[in-house]
Length: 373
Image 1: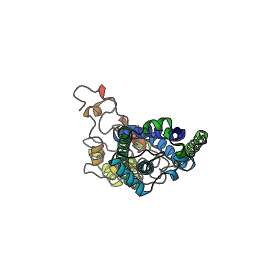
Image 2: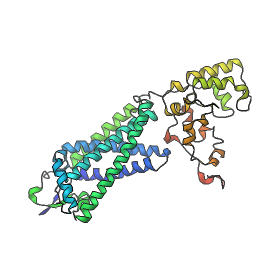
Image 3: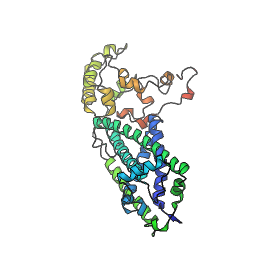
Image 4: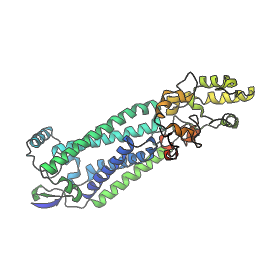
């Protein structure tokens, strides 16, 4: 028996970086508010790079890092499970059969998470390397797959931790220390493929994966999003409507709703906002030409295209659901003013994007006592 380097350094670094990155992605995805999307995206991009490296390392890495060394025969997995139940499972030099299958499952779930996340980002937020390609409906459907994959990964991690506990505590196999030091106590006859150092190869491969993904992603992200377009807001619209409230982005209402609003300016929610015929016609033409039907954004689909009897954006079910947990006192702050002031919390409201990472809620600690509920 001898201590032999089984897990090479690149594989061990990948493992612990993946643990940290998945933890950040999980916290920002399950617990943190929507405004933390930037951190969630950073974790997602890091996962993509780590996955690309691991898939390549599964072919070019040291013997026990390569996928071809995985004992994936179903009978071997069943035998190992049976021996675990009998508390008689033998230690394996590399991955045991159940552990090998778990790695395949985790890598598959992580790949599904990264791909579905990019589709969601492109379809719902009109951002990222797929923003030019994915429409809102595709992004909306991918969000469900993203959530399923996230819960699946959480379940796989729970099973993995249970397996580590059984191996380390019940069977006394030092699997955790082996993933830290790389060494295992094995017979020399079982040690294979460890005659070379793979540090330089691992660093080179990781650098190539990072440069290719980051460079390609940045290039694709620079292509204009398919569902969003910049709008040149007429000065007259900003002046007339912005005098009392935000000059709302035209994608927040349908053309029919805008016509209803423009035709009722003499009694505009209790105020006389009448305009001369020429100004009203110019504003109406601008709003109709850039109404919700002409945008493929989340705001346009979930608020703009939902007509309400009052014609108010704040009466749409989506607006109500997304703002339900916000304290009433927030809307009374001088920096916000009221529920109709989108710019008070959405830094990109003027663009019509309403991206989650551009939400900036005021500090609740500054609210008067009794208004934080």
